[in-house]
Image (tube, rainbow, N blue to C red; front, side, top):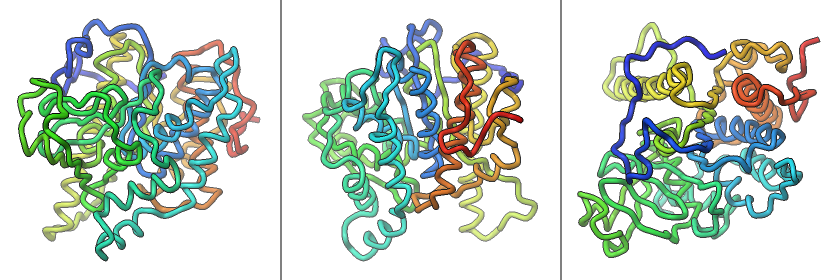
Amino acid sequence: MQPSIQMAERVFVADPPISNLESRISNPEEGTALCLSGGGYRAMLFHTGALWRLNELGYLPRLERISSVSGGSIAAGVLACGWSRLHFDDRGIAGNFREFVVEPICRLASRTIDIPSVVKGLLGFGPIAERVASAYRKHLFGRTTLQALPDRPRFIFNATNMQSRVLWRFSKPYMGDYLVGRVFKPEIELATAVAASSAFPPILSPVILKLKPSAFAKDSGELQHPPFTSRVILTDGGVYDNLGLEAAWKRYQSILVSDGGAETAAVPKPWTNWISQSLRVLMLMDHQVGSLRKRQVVGSFQMKLRGGAYWGIRSDIRNYGLADSLDCKHPETLRIAGTATRLAALAPEQQRKLFDWGYAICDAAMRAHVLPSAEAPSCSPHGVFRPSA
């Protein structure tokens, strides 16, 4: 049971369509897309728990598209990189999911990469964003490029173009945005794409792509000229769309949204000095954009404009109305949701809690709205959550 949210608009669309094919707002094609939000390691682990449950439900091979930003792009990148090695049985379940998805995520979550990247960048060992990409390259993706990713599902890693002010997509078929244009079959490394998607401003941002203007498809954007096409400056995809929704919403009838983002808390006495005030204003702007996106999703489910399900790291599992959902006390899950938004090492126990909470809330959302006949799990993967006594 979704929370009641009234929508004045039929559909909120922030971006002109990148092609006629992807502009079917009122008449989307059949198929299911999964959106993974930002939120650092917290979101990465939460989403991996959700992917774990989707795998058990045999749902991963049903996905046409996986669209991600920031921390969600790390989880999506690991899934994309390991996809060809996943062995799906006739039920659509990969028996080696833990080996090729969960374990690499655990290894990265045990390492801090944000502060070392900042320190090395300040000491002159290359741009900070490149140090983050180097960490992804070393610990997750190697030299894998976008061309090594599967054709289906299509993985889209979203960043924000600071020049054109719109969403920049990285995918196997093309990268680019609707104003600057598209580069087909990009040989960009997966580590670079994920680093751009997770380049949290201002510390880990920007990622700068040095490209040849001739690489862009002719007449594919109104800003198709240097420096827009020669030096592309990118920041975190969550600046534009923290749910990764844009690249999925315009195309598919069924949308699954996993939201591991933080909530901007109310404060009785905000700081008024210039620096702290500016940071607070940026947080409020981010909160407003995120709220609009969430209202778009939930309201459209209620109005039957789209099918699918939404689950969030701050959701109350009781709202899904299942008598047999895992027993997840809301105060406890809110403490889990309070994990800092960083690329900083988390203790094994905290990792297990985030994995299992993502698994449990995804299970409730899927069985409530998508797969009502699915069997309830006996417990979460690490036993953090079990059925009610």
